Image (cartoon, rainbow, N blue to C red):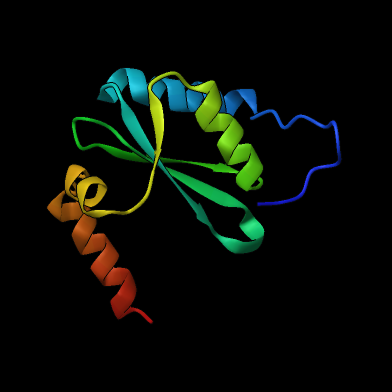
Length: 105
């Protein structure tokens, strides 16, 4: 996690919080949040709803991701363990798009 100056509180962007809250409301409580660093672009927070839906929110850094998760009720930190992976329902169309992107390399 990025070091923050002493006494400085990290606050998640309102737009990111609103997006995550809408996802939780639409896809069931509690939802899971998996934080993944994606390099210079920042951090991706992958959201997995209880109905299996998957979404994501991009934020600046890991501290902002933690602030986002803390700001959204019924959003729990998770990892890509067997339980979270099994909870994510990815459709066949999405799987084909992911496979096609690998073939283009």
